Amino acid sequence: MRLEGEHRRSIARTADGKGARILDQRRLPWEIVWVELRSAADAERAIREMWTRGAPLIGATSAYGFAMALAEDGSDAALDAAYHLLAEARPTAVNLRWALDEVAKAVRPLPAAMRGEAAFARADAICDEDVALNRAIGAHGLQLLRDLHARNPGRTLNILTHCNPGWLATVDYGTATASIYLAQDEGLPVHVWVDETRPRNQGALLTAFELAGHGVPHTVIADNTGGLLMQRGEVDLVIVGTDRVTANGDVCNKIGTYLKALAAHDNGVPFYVALPYTTFDPMTPTGADVPIEERDPDELALLSGPGANGQTTVRVTASPAYNPAFDVTPARLVTGFITERGLIAPAALSS
Image 1 (spheres, rainbow, N blue to C red):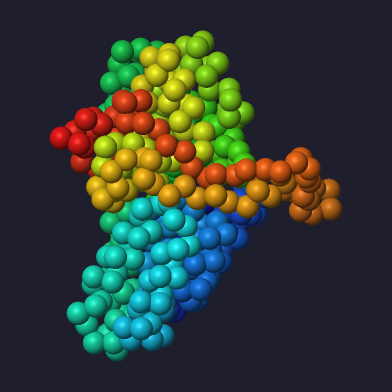
Image 2 (cartoon, helix red, strand yellow):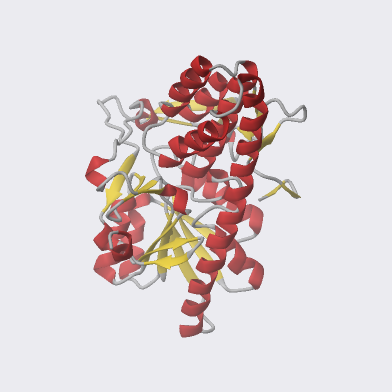
């Protein structure tokens, strides 16, 4: 990722190697603030309160939190306590539990005194693996964009995104944005329609911030604008990320994704989901079996941002509010999955 003119990762070990350093994404794009996490409790809070977010990055953050706990106390009791604390931070994203399982698998055979160091090593490896996976996802998605451009030479490719599937949701590159960054670097003419993504506005605040930093032409739109753009032929394809894909190919992603898939299906616009294989969940049969996180209604009822005298919060409704964080897009609406192993049809998951 390009941040303040330098290449950075969204998470890394602290200088002393005993903690993890993350961006406080609640402050973006207005302020760039790095926060040091020093305990499993810090990591759990950062995940639950969305200082850090996105399925792969949640996994990496939980892995480091787990390592911090085991460096302090490597006993079986401490291992189990830290695992359960972190696993409950956010229930929908499958990468969180996957990363915890990977660390636990690496350290359980070891004596208690060796578990902390081994856990940090596995957390480091999870981060390195995530970067490589996302770079590979980007390469396969880039070929898709090349093919689309070849069919329409001389015309800008218009891509619609939802939420933030970028490097701020991963360790680097992003999932859905990886191919866009590579296309921009290659000189393909791309433009991104960026859903604002209410109620937390991850598109308007985070995706737009990322794209601007990489020099990618983009336009922020209201969440309900995508359907009109598709009717007008102004969207060539939709690419989204995901927090979990179930055994039958159903896609659980930020609330509003399902509506984009319906509009794309109705207008013959390809709808792709970009993800690493770690986000597939073969143990959950269908999207109906995924626990949908319900968040604080105030995320919907309040809006915050910079004002004349600092941060300002305003209330937009006095009525009761309902705030589910995710919805489920049925596999039948998905054109294909862009993974580190290539493009995969939804039918291939259940075969």
